[in-house]
Length: 439
Image (cartoon, rainbow, N blue to C red; front, side, top):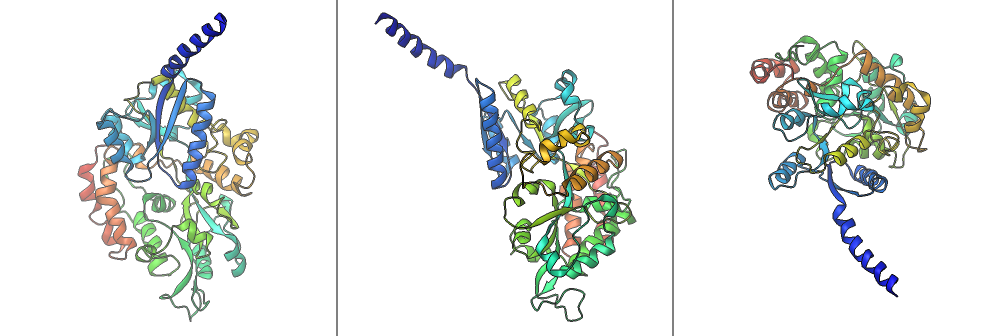
């Protein structure tokens, strides 16, 4: 009886100590409904494998930056979380996020991550990609089969030249009477199926400027070069898909449409330019689809980048926050890689077949068969042979220049309110004073 009382007393004393000792962390992120579920699963895996640590996943699908700042102001800063690429330099210089350089100096596995994945501020590392991402083509196989058109190429050295791509898009675009855009009877005012769809943010137009031999910013980070012929031509040809060739929806028409993934699923769009991360969603949407490489102007190329992940300076649990940060970038532990949201940051995960299989083949039905061509060969060649880091990684002042000057000018092109020549004419004079050189 005495032993039983002693055991009960020990148990009563132990429980509150255990609860008190548990370290609570908060991970903040954005993303679709599918991504929300996938991230929650990863957090559950981390909690199960790290006794004494409990992480809460906080999904913030809209107004992310504003809500994070409200949390910080209220003394409830996250421990680890997503950071928009255009926000990294601002938050790092304000001391909101930690300098990760000491972690890289002491951890060989972190140092094995590609240089293109690091957001640098001077000699410091402010954040890294959560993963590698690339821009690719998604397509609805049924629409291609019905039109008798070959699928988009998956090999980079077989990519469509731009004019060939436009011709294919015309064959796939149909009006409400079934006429395609090559027919003399085609009615551009009553389009039922579009051959192609794209959005207006920089990930959708930047690859084609690079493909055409253009540059956005001078190497010293002080001069915008988007008024040069290569950039103007690439932007105009992209806008012409809507206004000249009628193979892509106009910005006005997209306001009444669901997102491009749903348009693909429902057979209203044959091809969509989008980030590879959409594989997570599309693989669960129940239709026959595939992926291909981008069409090109002068050379086949895509851009690689990634939403950033950082450790917030306000964390009270620095060691545990670092473990969570590293866990998210490990394809052996994080199911977001085999589920189609992310691609690895280490070169060896692309070059060693056994490691590649761990994320491409782990879950049947996620990645289509052509993924090794599109996501391994094409991505790695673009990343290593033609590195094109978006300016958010290396230009001081890029975020302000993009939001205040460049994107509004690009929007005028896509809404057909100005030609690319007209829209880009004054961009350097407005943007250059806001640039402060390389980070």
